[in-house]
Image 1: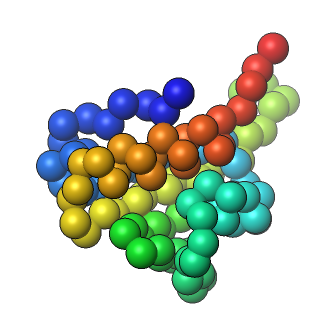
Image 2: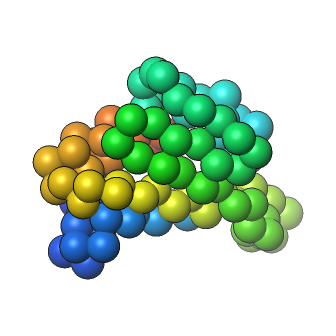
Length: 100
């Protein structure tokens, strides 16, 4: 299940996620999350209804464990709530990781 979008996200047309994933793995998985076509230029990617910027953050270190982190900002210029909800549901589901 996707994280519900906050009213401020719906109003601004911008969603941010901090993800524990490396840059290369994120961009390898991205087409499956957003569908095609997409245009990828460096840290920026865009599709028909959205634009995305990925920024590497310092790793999260917990004892000997080191987790890569990526801040992902997704902009929806139309600010269409239904488009945002549908996109983010697919995006969050695709990048969801199980624990256990």
